[in-house]
Every structure is written in structure tokens, then in C-alpha cells.
Image (cartoon, rainbow, N blue to C red; front, top):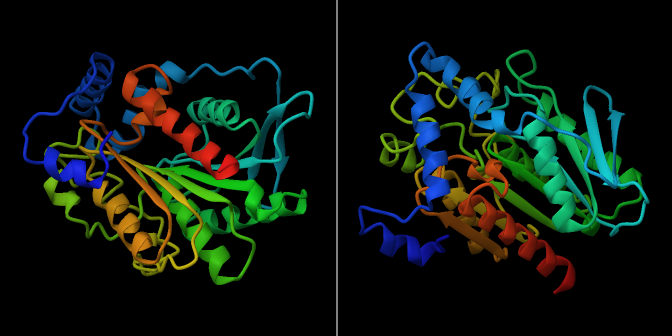
Length: 319
């Protein structure tokens, strides 16, 4: 894991150290990205499905209860101890998938891990997705889910908003909205490989084009062809939070893989937030790919990332 200054030093070297388990995961992603018979436009969804196939099984972990809550236009899945005895804390999980993918079992496994390391409840939002439901559908669903948590008696400082990829961007957009509307802010925001710039203006979109095993080497992917903005300007901060103002934001943990085309999406938001005085933990993982944390604890890099999530949550709630 690299902090910002360490990354500058590491960029002078051509090789990075990746664990054998992490290398196997990286090679698997690279192999899938070049499999014959998978058209470029299908690769984003197909890659995600195949790479996460190892997590396609999901059973409610022992001692936990799982409930599905109907909101106006979407569902909220609730995971908490059966006994009802847990910290007065809830993680609102906003899944990734390029605003096209729905909630699936990999995210339920991630929710179980969030529950384990936080000791509270986890609410996973199955929001509406494009192309049938462009912006502001997912954004409105996230707002409704947050309002639901407040209505259940959770104070803002008892909520952590977490998201990966598109869900990471949605987590930031939601918090921008809450700040703008002077609503109760969450205690913290956690992002993993957040997609914050749907205009693709960051340097890493070109610098990592040939090294990103998930999205690199082709402009015929959901990164470049995405219907989520609809008729709206993709520079709107609620669509591309990289263009937002981070004054007054809660603490943030932002993780990203070093080989990602979306690397600058995290770095630029972190930079802007720090200028505004926000406490930001920015973590770049050498050699890693987009949302490598989906590996849970199956290889050291993913395990280390989740340990950092646990440490961050403990710091927020224990000081």
C-alpha cells in the first residue's frame, strides 16, 4: 500500500511487488480481458461476473439476519446480528457496476465483511441502473436510502457511506447533496476505486490505458460509452463528484489500485478534499486492479485493504 509520497518514489521503478495470490488474481483478470468470444462492450459486465464467480455462493452468515426492505423504487438489503445486539452504527453500502450492474452476491459477501469489521448493521442498496434508469435514478435512490436510515433512528454520525467504483462516486455524490441541503452528514465515507469522473479527463485514463487489466486497451467499454448521465452534463458534481467542492466533508478513506485507469479519479478528489481541510486517508495499492478488494481475504493485498477499512472505522468511532 502506498501513501502519496511513496507512490511518487515508486513511479521511478518499472516493477512493483505483488504477492503470489495478488498476481494470480491480476493474471486472471488480464486473461479474461483477452478471451476470444467476449466482445469489448460486453467485457465490463462479463469480466465482473467471471472474476467474481468465486463468490457466487452466498448464505446468510451464522448469527446474522438478512431482510429485504422495499423503498419507493428500489430495495435495501439489511444485514445485522440476529440478537439485535450490535453497535449503533450502520454502513450504507453502494455497489459498483458502472451504473449498469445490480446488487449481486459478491456485494453481499462484502456486506458481511463490513458487518464483521464494524460490529454494526449493513444496508446494501439495490438501486435502479442505466440504461433503463439514467441519472438521477441511482442518485435519488441513494438519497432515499439515507433518509430511511435517519427515519429508523440513526443519527448522521452513526452512518458510514461506503461504495466501490460507480458506488464510490455515488457515495461522494450523496454526501455532496447532504452537505448542500444542510442535512445530517455521515460519520465517514469509504471509497474503493471510486469512479468520480464520467468525463474521463484524468491523466490516468491515458497513462494507465495499456496497463489496466480491467478496462485498458479498448475504448469500446462502459467507461467510454455510458448512458448514466442521460441528458445531463456529465460535469455536474452529482454525476462526476471530481468537480465538486469538498468543504465541510466528513473523514474519508479512499483506496485505489495503482494500475487503474480510474486512479486519478481518486487522487483528484483526495487532493481537492485535503485543500478544503478534510481528513483524507488516500491509499494506493501497488500493482492492483479495479476493486481488487472483491477478493475479500483471498490474497494479501485485498486482506490488507480490508484491514485498513477496519482500522479507519475504529479510528472514527474510538478516536
